[in-house]
Length: 259
Picture (cartoon, one colour):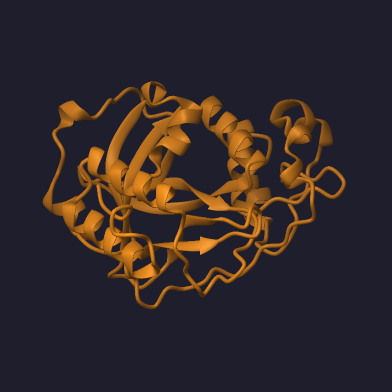
């Protein structure tokens, strides 16, 4: 629904997100979208003026959805019952009205997102766990660099992170900014540490990984940034240690895989 302007294709999750934000499509139209079909815009001007993706060159190429890689054995998973065992005090949650969009960021990479929308602008912030998902490290075809990513895994696996409820306008700006860097969002269900079940969006690379089934060691500075960020944000120690051990097993120097 929201977005084909001659050669521009977007994943269904991004189209639906934008569609919901601008309330330009009925639920019936959204239901008709197929994961393997392009999103069709009833008015191209909506994309050009409201969404302003004309400057996002990375999305102007013809993109095709690729099947998600399932992780049989999640090496970063740990502390998956933390959302039930360690509820956070309500005083640490900034609550306003119920509007906005939940954005789940994971494994210490929160600042990539908060630098865009401003952590102080979040309507609400809460630690959260994404059950059935796994954080992996793969080389992406967009920049030939290794990044953290989130992939479906078995029900006992999990990914830890932070869920932010942000205003719809900021979420729109976030989508535009991340799309220019080769990212979109996909829907994900997470459990907040206060017990709430949240329907959220999470960052997802637009371009496919070079070897989706093969993990690689990221740059040492990148690995250390993630590990130190998890420590600074008081991640579950078992989860942070699990990610650190996995980075070491991939070949990240011990000094960079710790903080």
